[in-house]
Length: 222
Image (cartoon, rainbow, N blue to C red; front, side):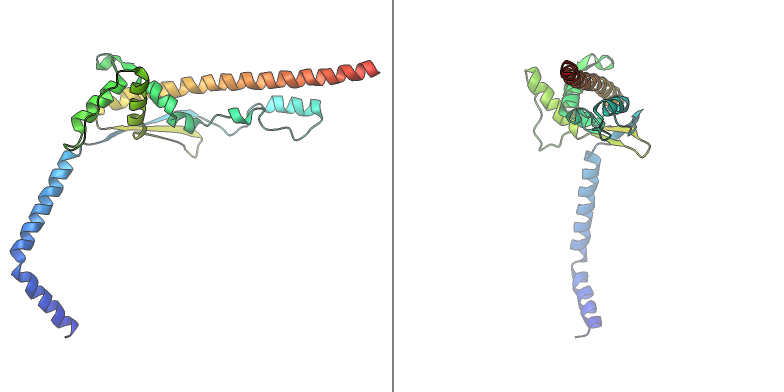
């Protein structure tokens, strides 16, 4: 049997079931239409928070210490473990949990986590279980933080600017939550920079004290 005859036989055999095939196609189209109608639209905000540069921290302090110690290869940062990754900070659990425990005056002064739970229960699939808000604050913050996690995206663009995107199916929640998120990122970033500066200062003081002790020993010997 040639390929032409094979195609002809397949076409004739399929023609016997054309009504069944047409019915199956209509049922599949109706199912896809209902599925698309059941999926709510998603709204996304995009914010450029503040510019960042790649200049190493404490350049002046490093230069001064390098001269004092006679070492031209002083470390770029006194406390590398305290270096702040702004993207990790924006996506961190602490930031998310702090955001969801804030209240929105424009939404009846409700907690953001309560609004997220209400929106989820309103738009969930019929087979999905509803989320019940925990009674204690720690569990409530953890629940809200996990719900917020999927809607946040942060990156540093090619110009060194932090971009934060937030998505939600409730258009009225996108902007208010975005503003709170940006505020928390800025607040935590400043707090961490102050803490890092304090660590670097204490490190410098200890090194200066050590250097002074060495100089005192040489003075006594002289």
